[in-house]
Every structure is written in C-alpha cells, then in structure tokens.
Length: 312
Image (cartoon, rainbow, N blue to C red; front, side, top):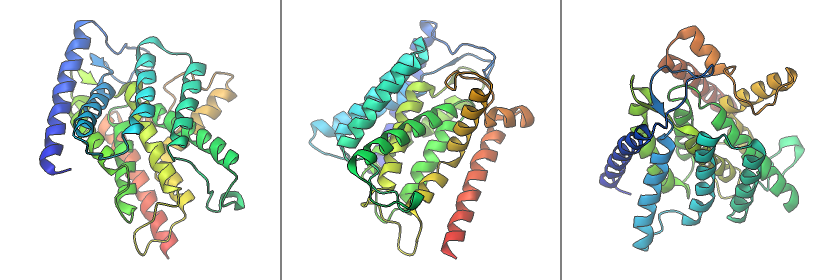
C-alpha cells in the first residue's frame, strides 16, 4: 500500500473517532467512573470500534476490487473477538461465555494455519503431535489476548504495546510477514487514536472491543514467529520461543502477577481491579505518558539487551 492510501486511512479513522464518539455521547454511553478508573473526565470506549470499522471498510474496498492484500478470512475470527469485546464493554459479558468464544476463535485461527507445532527447544521439545499443537495454540491465544486486555488501563499503554510488538516482528523478519498489510491499516488507526486517548476532555479509550481484536492480531504474529515460515534477518540467530516471550514480556508478567495475587486473596482472577503494575507506577509518577515511557522503555531496553546477549 502506498503512502497516500495510508494517509487516507488515517483520515478515515480520525473522522470515525469523532463521529462514533459523538453518537455515543448523544446516547449517554460513557465510560463510567469507579474505583478502578484512571481518569476523571468524560470518555467513551469507542477507539476499537473506529479501528475495526476502518479495517473493515478498507478490506472491503480491496476485496470488491479483487485485490487480496491479506487473507480476508482473518476478518471472521477478528470480527468475532471485536463483537465479544464491544458486548463486554457495555453489558459485562460472563467470563465463561467469553472464554468459550475465545476458544472457538483460536480453533478458527488453527484451521487458517496459525498453530504452534514446534516448541523450538522449550522443555526440550521441538515438533509436537497435532493434538498437543492445537491445545498449546488455544492456551497461548487465551493468554495473549487476555494479557493485552489486562494492560488496557491507562492512556496509550495497550495501543503502544500492540504497535511495538508489530513493528519489532516486522523489523526482525527476513521479509514482510503475511500480516504486514493488515497491520499497516491497524497502525493508521492506532496513530489517530493517540490524539483522542491523551487529550484532556472527551477522551476515547480502546475498550475491550479493541483490545480483544488487536490482541488477536498480536497472537497471530506470535504464532507466525513460531512457524517454519518465519525467518529472522540474515545474521540474527535467536530462539523463536524466547523471542516470542520477550517481545510481549510486560503483558505476560502483569497477567501472571495479578492472577497470582487475586487467587491468593481468594478472588476470581477475572474480576478487574486497580492492582496492576501500571496502576502502581501511575500512582507514583502521576503522569500517564511518563508511566507509558517507563514501561515501554524498559521493555525495549530488555529486548535490546536480550538481542545483544544472544548474539555474543
């Protein structure tokens, strides 16, 4: 896709953000203030809706012009996760129902070829039987999308984590991945969302609709990295399994931490609170952008040190 088209997609996303938020404000669909809120101004959970509609519109343009810029069948599992997330944003869906639908989506992705069939030395294992590969893929999918969903608690963190992961995989890949064009569209939507996410009044949050469907894209990237098709750039010798963990290290650590704490305290691990690492940092530094810088900066530093270490 050329630069002019990317600029058009950004403009479409900006217009959608304005229009959809105006509609939600008109019908009083605000993000409620409570003990977990990290904001005290009017906000809507419509960022993910704008990003997904932008993707859907652009994809349909190419589809009806018989130009396959990516595997359009991916829109089915991504669309399911988007709908589940939007429903959860407004009606607090039962976590058992969400898990069931997430498992169904994971199975669809497996049938589309996104499957972990090789452990690349983890636990001393390499190629694994097909049944184990499917169960592993489902488990990893559940972990990734919920980890991304869990960090969507302060301005810019989830979208920056998603953007960082996409760019790192594409940067280290020998060639453009099959997800490159899909991600280019999503990145345009994410870029426009930064303005609405950080402004002082009438904020727009990603919402579960965005975090679940974008988390699914990140899961697809991890599955692709672990596949035989993915090759690192010439001169890079990195274990794929270790690389997959290190590039999404913060969401994984935060997910594990809150799960352990909630279970230890006799609470459901799926009942949200403000006990995440980013919430604790925010209470110390008081600024969302500074919290974001500390977390993402630390991740990038760890990734850099990891690459340097494995290459020595």
